[in-house]
Length: 181
Image 1 (tube, one colour):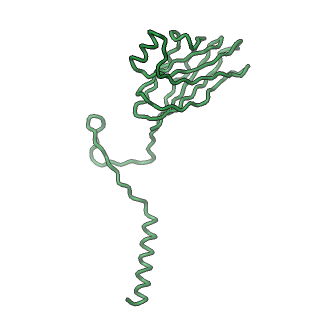
Image 2 (cartoon, helix red, strand yellow):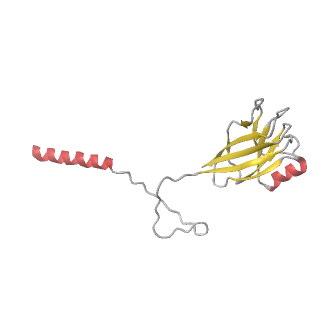
């Protein structure tokens, strides 16, 4: 092979390699059709970034004074639906409703929304499989408070949230659960 032809082929090969690197990578995608859940028909296309997260908030729940140990009086704040997620982070923030003489811990208890777990709470006052988030040090004179975020592993599709307030006055509490895959 003569030298000019060899150089031309080498130059063409380098240009082809450079051009291939500039092209976006093609990644094969498998689409699973689940007709009972979600029917896929025709062309499938996705635009933008897919997120696999969800923020669930139980907002502005009034919690009168009730000690954590008084399980029959805990405030039922609602349910967090966590089905399809593997991890979560819960945060708790609140507002004191008036001057507090004695400020006590304010917290949230997440219990699996399962019949046997809720029966143990109702019949025996037991908090089975509980995930608990609380604020223990509320500064004197503060109007607002927040707990450190608490990561947790999602082990059940639904969690019922119960709140307590060991202070002397009612508080308003908001719980946020950020769920991820």
